[in-house]
Image (tube, rainbow, N blue to C red; front, side, top):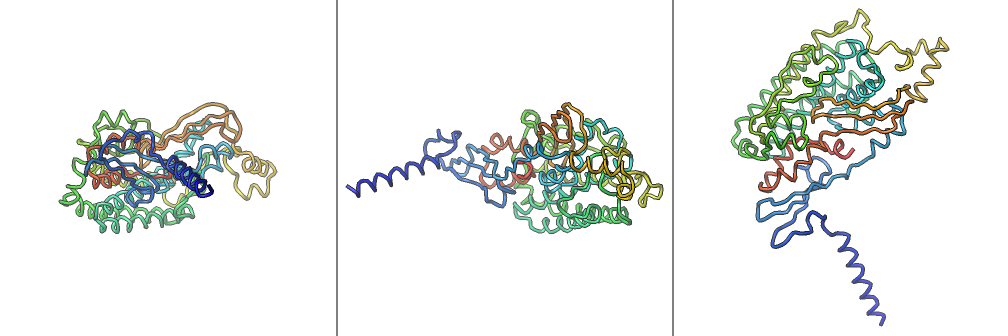
Length: 427
């Protein structure tokens, strides 16, 4: 009798385990001899903890279900319990390949809520654009290197990381950190450019264009690269718009849309640059678009350095923050000598900036696409609600429509051409 009881319990345990490991609802109707594979969440070509459940008929994919959320950290809920300034370091962790651009996008959203986005000093605006375009080059270099390595071209990865290391050195000189910069502030930036920094950027720009050309020589007409990317992962213009794609993935499908042109912010309206677009919408087009975007970023950076108010050393003492002691932390010497500045600093640090009630949305053209922040304010120093429009999350939503019909080996090339970051996708 005891033996029967033990067997019954074992059967119940096995039933519970089977129920727990049941496939997602989308795959429960699988019939016949099709094979189901898990790609990820621990796979080098998923660029993070992305899991894709793939149904295959032989070598051909018949269905693909992305499974996300392994990196979810609750950033949007965290923002409701922090002042606007305290949340700035959390934006570094979204697209952690372009933290400077995330900082700028978030600061501009809060400044739009407060109605001070048009009051930013010119030097501050130019510095922010320089930060955004350096971040764009850095993110595209890593995306290109990882994409090439995924399909077997390791040399390109070494080329791109050589230049990316130089950008990290520039970030360290400017912000004090290489990776998580937290450079912007509501109403400006944390500090002005250090001595000699502009000359270092000019030297880097002269070197990176050579590196971009070398990478193109290695890839653009490479027979293996062309075979692995051309006519693979084709996204039509209509499909890209329907799924809400943005950034290079949208422009690769032939849609001439860039937030910097469509809704200019900072000083982008005063700068000359072109928007590269593709014609086919395949992985090869998305690669070409990113290559040209890096060249256009170099073009923008040259203009910003030439037009920078106050010049490289800022001898005219152009401000980098708005002149408002209730928004920007006062200078330390004034805090130590003036009661009013001391009170302002105490209020800003403990309670945050006093934002008015209201709702706003601001979107910026980040390397991965349109990074947007929706803020619902009830007044005071913390948001009532904050929603992040993460371009990687939106771009990945098209995978179930793109992957079917391709071979398993094509998944690596398609994912590489999407250039997503799971830290931003899961938030």
